[in-house]
Length: 189
Picture (cartoon, helix red, strand yellow):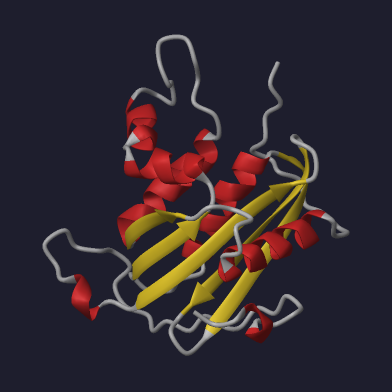
């Protein structure tokens, strides 16, 4: 892991660095030939709901890439999920991904099969309650079919250099100008 001082101080998006290959991961195929990438993500919301942002750091071994974006009105959970989506979307090839986040909501929903269950139940958590953020879960499930992803939870604000860096990216994005609308955000009634 690089020291946080070696990270760029301003958001710069480098070109996609993975070679193009078949976008699907075969369940019978070997992951050994796929690129290995570490992704760190975080989401932030100044008020919940309120202006929010995400930050992501992609580690390709000797190269790093950062991504961030901000939204006018959203939630912290949406930004946590969106950080993972944007990072995975940026990959041009099927990859073996270790994704690190401080969001237990994100990790548990993907690793415990909740999103798949909600999807199978027409985005219902149970007979009474709708699943929140179905638009984002749908996209994340589609991206998960393209990559071999292992989700890792890290404790937030505990000195993890990459998580702290992504947090700063997310907060800076949430405080930015020209914030985008989050068309998928639906206020609770």
